Length: 306
Image 1 (cartoon, helix red, strand yellow):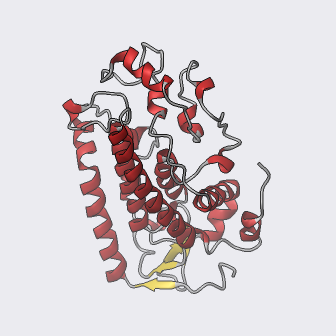
Image 2 (cartoon, one colour; image 1 turned 30 degrees about the vertical axis):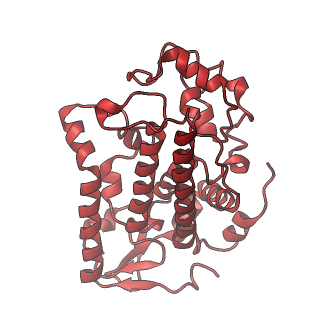
């Protein structure tokens, strides 16, 4: 099916303005703490990651898009008319996301996102890493990325790493391993191998669903984008609770993955996030990329070499 042949959903002004207002309210609630801290110049060891590592500010989240295949009646006389990747709709007063234009300008990016979402969702999840990637980032290293103390101390942290096999599959976690920790990992993920290694059990691959949704811009409906953001925030919480740092002063109780009970708790929550992230991957694929024009869609589905 081509984008031109796909049915267009038309929203009247009262409909889409209501959706936009709800999106603004939900975004403001989700980002209130961060915006307040930023206004005071305060840092947070857990939540700042969502805005600094991914480099998407609250104002980016706050901008509501209807998603691919939706036309907004009466939008041509609003500030939206100056936004990038919008085109005229079925009449002079309406606007719609410019799917064809976006894909033509961002062809390689769209291909990558399609491959990452589809291939990651197609694989079985791995649930035996126990969040040790954060431990590997401080292994035998006195200078840590976070100022918070290690709850087991340096020697205790190193001992936990040495008593396990590291099984990280995600390049953007592995690249922060200390030099001493890298040889302890079962695999050596690279940027080039990422499409072949990412799997739904990985917390960082789950957070990346939010990254891919942001990069698809106006093709992703606002409510879906915020669902992806909420997933990333929930995963970030577990990621830091299972980390070697002592974050109790910030209100985070540790998941003690060095114990049998802690491992079981981590895996239980990890499995739930794998299911949730896969549902969101499918939603992003259906909402944003189902209308990718031919032949680009066929090229995206073509197998690629590792």
